[in-house]
Image (tube, rainbow, N blue to C red):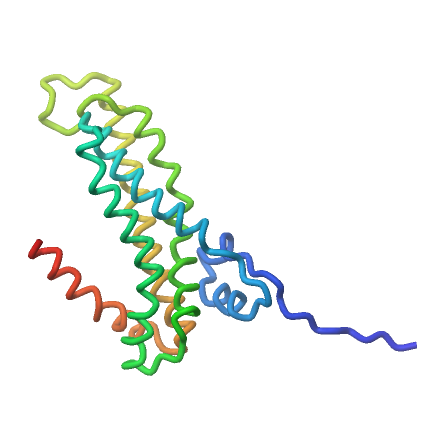
Length: 206
């Protein structure tokens, strides 16, 4: 009696856990999966992180109010959401100049799951918001108390986490885009920078 071993395609990748340090393997598993995990939650949490960063920064300065927070919060959330929805079409277009082969849906998978570090670290801003209520910036008070110094240290630590998460998210976006497009990391970076330059110039003019 013989036993046949059937090869079964991976049903679902584990991008929340593997994308951090194995982005290329994670993308290969995602694209090969019969059922791909949804990316809505990771993008939603990343957008929430942007909103919490805005609100936390205002709370730390004692300036948290609806009028101060509404517009920058909305803009930050829309940047993440529209970046994932519209960005893949732009990157598919610019990637074609560098020999890229991915379609927008494959690129969307790479962009969305690259936000995992930014999404997971969203909770870091909650303590800042809870501790807010008074200014912590240097020069705003004559003699800062111990509680204000603790708030300042907390804000500094969370800001470091925020910057590190942003940088790691960008690194993952470059690497995963290179994987799905089947070209080198420098070409991946080039296809992203093509769109970053006009956006930066536009932000400087507004």
